[in-house]
Length: 366
Image (tube, rainbow, N blue to C red):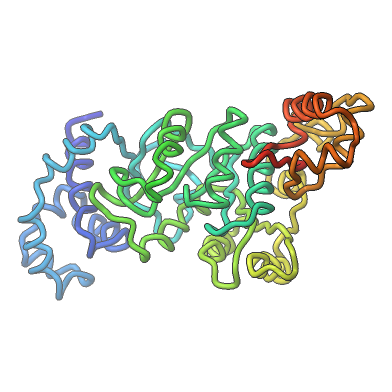
């Protein structure tokens, strides 16, 4: 990197530390001034010539006095945070197609432009057991087909999607609505570290930015912007996940929705999307068939259940287990075989990824 390029990054980061500017103004200001360096050093009279800051020129000068560009830049290094800008060759091509792409992206981990092979999975924070299982399974199946997973690291569906990818040794990106020196939600600090270790945690917000409600719709455009398609697993009628889906539509990307219980409020958003033309999703193949990637047919997916050879005992036990949690005592009663045999069979089915054990010794089909 040349000295001029380093200087541009330094001052672009400093401009991004002014919350009242935002991505659209920063991009337009740099275009007007010629560079981030010139924009930062511009006198007040020159700033007033820029229409978008005409009435805010004095505030711009005042905010500059509060920011030390070099100190802000050094803080990124201390937090092991790197950044890429719209002019960088590694900047995601799909993200550049947004009407107002973020002028700078901060990241921790190993950032890769996975746009040609990335799918976003989003949904409700207050997800049901069904929703989390579906998100986890879809992420695992897509990962097995070579697809990267993008989500927002929120509780519920987002967390399940990230875990489904990580547990299958895939690449996942988490886009935050705060600075990378914050973990939101706080309970996902371990997940954040896992993602940073094998994928990337991303934000357009500078260090010190708190997870305020207004940041998340802005964050959602990046989630959809990094992906060929967006899958909504569970969403209420006014869910933020629908904002992500709308961004995907505006960006001419595919939108998918998973149907749910017609009596559940968490299904209403998905069902509305399906009514409006979103692709109905029952398996990863429904997604792979629509996005422009080469993929194996469903029977060739790495976690295809049909291809697994089951003995007679495994088939009997599997047939008794529903897709909702069932206690081990009820499984034993239904099967009437010795408890020790049932436990051994359940372990075998777990290893074959056909059932999952949940807290309290409950089991369900996957």
